Each structure stands twice: as structure tokens, then as C-alpha cells.
Image (cartoon, rainbow, N blue to C red; front, side):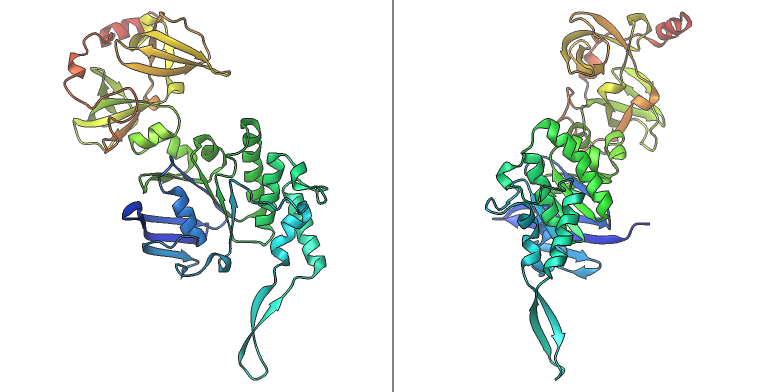
Length: 399
């Protein structure tokens, strides 16, 4: 079982009477890759700065190994930071950039012969500096680059130098504030794999800030989804994607069709005037709910075999699949499929129970996706073409 390393207890932060963090409670384990994910202004960078000691919360506690750290400055915490702008020294070569922090004398406290505490400055031996720098350059795949000038490196190589410089002091925690934001798409994807490899090899805690859902899903052990200064959901990438807790999380993590529905009973939900089987339970009878259907989970079938049928209104080629917009008489869904369908074509769709995810209504209901809040409007959508259950059974027997 992983050991808890950091805990935030009731942390809040306000700037000029504007609350940017609202009662954040979070723990982070040793050797964990945790990502703070959310849109601009959600409070993720402020949370990172509180952990690093660059900002003191207006309320709450920051604990490292159970010790309160609110008033401990950054340089006395076992934490280093990598920023989006790498802040490398252009007049120093790669070796000296990485070695910079090691050359700063450390203050140690000793006891004198008279029994009194004495502080003195201690420098690392040059041999140890060289050994540790070369070790870090090997970890970040820059072995042999010691004498290169910073201006001779690509963006990805400069970032690796920044990571090596942050790790060479052997911190317990590395904070990364959108470090891949300045890289192009291909290099960014390559660096995602590199960061995960480095974290696993070093065995230390990475706390990563991003607004990019793909980065979070690809690298993280744990994702913390934030919005409006609050934590919306914490979980493994698979759980966050497959079991979002509200419409914000469902919309922010991947593409989603979010519909209004009613939970009749355990494992039975109604939307579009039709009952569907699902895998969810524990809702009140006839409780209004949000229904999430991921675009890649929708199966397109011939019209006579579909549970619903609609008209293709737009198709966009995305390389590995087509983004297909289907209009169910005024209500549009996004469907991702490897098969091409012409605009104007009428198609059927089938939803299996594990394709449907049910969420409680929240403050975000009605704010995301092509849907409106549950009302009598759905009773009036008679022009949504549905196959009744008898027709569906006949279609099934015809197979």
C-alpha cells in the first residue's frame, strides 16, 4: 500500500476577495504521478503553488509526512519545480545548467564543542557534482550533451535539461506546471512517454498541472479534475473517463453526448421516450438523471435494426476515424466510427447496456452537450424517429 506523502486539509485561497480555491481536501501518495486537470482559472496552478510553498493559503493546512508546512519557504521543502518556460541559463552549457543548484553551498547546523548550535556552509565535492549531473543526463536521455549550448538544443531537449536540473537535487516531489505547453504536438506526445518513464525510474512523486485531457489520461496514476476552485472528481484515468460524476467532468474528459433522462428503476433508464437497459443502480425511482454516451460507444447499424434512427448532417475525417454528426430530428449526437457515411444518409444506432452511463443531476446539468434540462419538451419531440419495441423485436428475429 502506498504511503501518504502530502495532504491538503481545507485549503482555500482568495485574491482581492475573489475565492480561487474553495475548501480543497486532497492527499497525494509517495511515488505517485498525480495530475491536476481543469480549464484556465480553475485553481490548479494555485494548488500547485501552495504545495510548493510559493503561495500561502488563506485557510487550511499543508502537511508533508504529517508535518505542517504552511510557513516553510520553498527552498526548505523537498520540492522542485519545472515551469512551461524552462528558465535555463543561455550563457551556461547543459552540464552547468544542471549543476547550478548543486554548486550553491548548503547551510547545515552542527553542535559545537561547547554544546551550542553552529551553522556553516558546505559545498559538494566536484567529483560528486559531476557524478550526479551525468547520472541525471542519462536519465533524461541526454548523455553526451554535457558541452552543448542551450541555444543549440530543440525545445524537447531544453525541457529535458530543465527536468534534469530539477531532479539532480533529489527532491521527494517534482512539480510540473504545464511543461509541455510550448512544444508541438508530436514532440508533446513523445515527452508524455518520457515523463512517465522518468517518474517510474526515479520513483518520486510527480504533481503535474495541465488543461490537456489527453496528457492527463496518458501519464497519470491519479487525476484530480477541478473547476471554479473546487475538486469535481478524483480517480484513476479509467474511472474518470468511464464513470464521470457530473456533466462537467463528462464534457471535459473526452467527447460526450449528454442527454436528459429518467431512471425508472435499477438498470432501466428512459430517454428519447424509450427505455434502455444500463448497468447503473442506486437511483430513486423516476429520478431525473444525466445520461452520458461516449461517441466511440455508439454502434451504427442498418435503419431497420436500430433502436433509434437519424440523419447524418456532417462528417469530418480525423485520421483514425470519422466524426459523424447525426441529427435525431433536432437533437444532434457525435458518433465516432471508422466507417464513412454520406451527409443526408439515414442510419440506425444501437446502444448496449455498458455504453450508457448514468449521473445524478448537478449544477452543471444543461450546460454541456446538445441537450436541455429535462422538461415537457421531450414529450413534444414526437418528430424524433424511434422504433418501438415490437419493431425492434421483429428486426432482431429477422437477423
